[in-house]
Length: 288
View 1 (cartoon, rainbow, N blue to C red):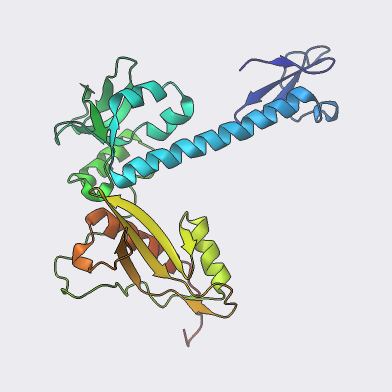
View 2: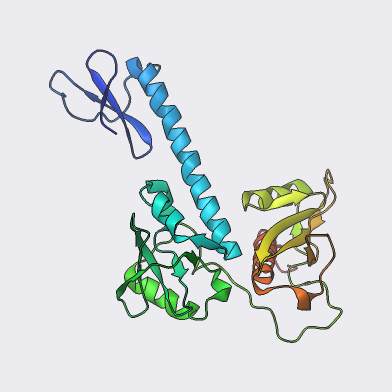
């Protein structure tokens, strides 16, 4: 976006998410000012740019949230759709350098470009830029990536920084040996907090939903909706509270045996429980 006339002797523009001004006359003509002059703070053009900046921030956040949802659920995404949204800087920022998989499970690489012809350009593990033209691609959850450690090492070499946390996302793999009747994980139970409000606030700040006495995380795993839930205490309870067991249920509300929980739902549920537990009150001193 170019510079716009605003009042006598000034122009304004949106630069790196904030409204900037420059003088059009005098010794400072053409130079960007360090701060917005008082005379411009209520100018209509400045107000319009501020509202545009707010919209762009919301748009960028919604792009990241949508791509994160695709990745967590490992949903197939039409290549044509990626090509259409790629010119948008917010979409491109959210998608760039994510690991994508084409028709062939061996077609794995970091997404670098999507052309208007529906062709994707990715950097594979050999460091080669290859072109893919599948009808759909997946942005796999990291727990499903067989070469995750190799991808992490290669990403470090390339200096890859992902806007959507994928390859460096904390993951947990389900133990092979689980009892038939086991239905709860107690590893992150017992984390003490000063109040239920503080624990609920931590859950929402981490992006989790709070419903009743639970913090929840809903995931589509292998085409099935699964919800992980951690007990955080009764609403409006003001005294000390502690995290409870982690359990999973299906879309009908039936509690799942741990053996029934899919790999992505398991990993995301454990990730939520661990993140909540990490904020617990830690006692200090000899008696801790």
